[in-house]
Image (cartoon, rainbow, N blue to C red; front, side, top):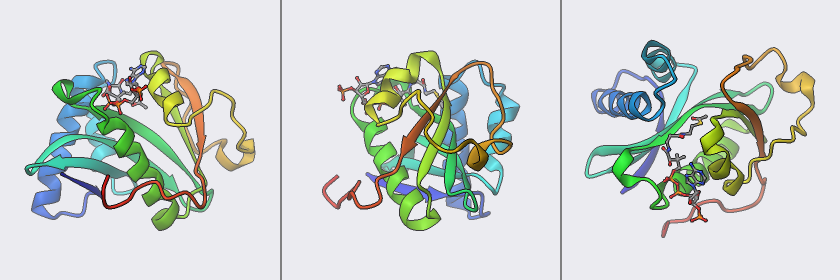
Length: 165
Ligand code: ACO
């Protein structure tokens, strides 16, 4: 099992994984237009953290780091149907936080959570209250009707991952 974070860089193996992730999103997020999913997953300003097991994608999170604003927007998050509620979603989020902090230099995440995923995001430290100053994110993320805006502050010291997890 491994966790990788990458974007559309033209490397064959990475492209196979990104297509696999796109297919998981299309199945798990039926309200999202498939063309929109493909566009963001393949967009070079987005990155995807993925869980890979035996060279297959189990799930992932696609996000856009706004480095100048020091926050990231999570666009899509899903685990393949038969692997949900086994802890992968939590481990994925921890890898995302570690990467976003240590590589992108981010302090916060914002996301429009689906109603049925609010419980998952709360367990990952997200809140419905937005504490991030509006001028840091307003105009960067698009308004979206189908979800609830949630925020997560990334701890600047906590080790989110270690070699045993
Ligand atoms: N509602 C409430 N709680 C949940 C949900 C949910 N939909 N899913 C998981 N949890 C809880 C689990 O019970 C667990 O709680 P515990 O720690 O007390 O045992 C905790 O959240 C973490 O569970 P994991 O096993 O780590 O979560 P999982 O691997 O299933 O990943 C995810 C969670 C990504 C939501 C997955 O269930 C999934 O793909 N669901 C369908 C797609 C979806 O709804 N994605 C989010 C849409 S919003 C967006 O993409 C921005």
